[in-house]
Image 1 (tube, rainbow, N blue to C red):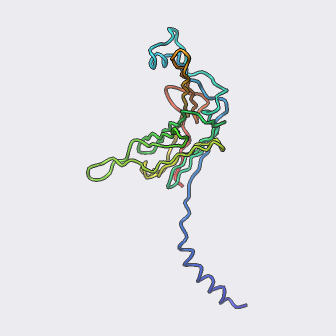
Image 2: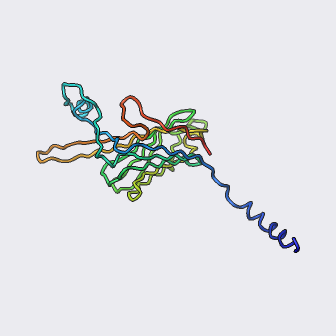
Length: 220
């Protein structure tokens, strides 16, 4: 059998193969978090005194066990580090709440950044990454304008992503994450009842002094 047709086919395919986009490699790390470890904010503690001017004379814990809370109960976090850094947080049951957010700490070899993933009044997500990067002769701030946040109530996930360039294209990142929500209920006497919940995505408990962190996720 002649090899000439095969050679012609290969010659025709090579230019097309060269035009294919490069594959974007990424390292992905998934961290599980136990179900039922969310905490309720104790407004009878010093937190209540700070916010409302009233608190118990006896010292009380800031956080209380809230195993029935599902909307902030993180069960899994997946971090993907490529040209875009993507964080997908899965909850036990992401019910549609009025106030829900993820407060994330992004640690790099050169600094720390705060990533907020929040839910707007219409149910869609929006995000903010701070502080901005500084560049140019005048060292002007360059805000990250392509932070994306998506709430998926079917999959019980919140996905936040941003270009790695917004945090300096680091070799690795490390993530800390709190899921929080508040609920304000008007009462018949004109006052309101305020309740709040929080879960540390990388720790089995919540501490006011520190937060859990993921392993380092290197750029793929």
